[in-house]
Image (cartoon, rainbow, N blue to C red; front, side):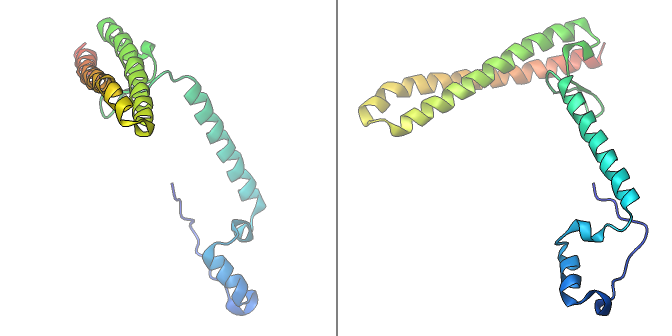
Length: 155
């Protein structure tokens, strides 16, 4: 996020020269604007800490499941309702199966593009079956997501 500073600095063209002023305007080098090295070091330290927190946070996430605008769950233990937790396990398996079928479909379509007409006729039914499976899994996933949310919110 952009955080504007409290002070506004005005540069004198006669002191800096036209080239330097143009470089400042283009923000050619952020380092040229660093005047307080203590503030710069403190900011760099905060940035490093924030990045470390993000890495640690990502390590603890098995998945991302949005319950509502205020709640997002990242692992099975976040679910409070045991039935919702069981459904979440099924949802995870469905999600893995869905991703695998998506990848398989992508591979089939890539192969289809390079095949001869005879080979295309042979592989077309398999592509249609895989497309149907992907659509079914997507619908199942969506239904499960709604059930999980309903169960978790009505505990």
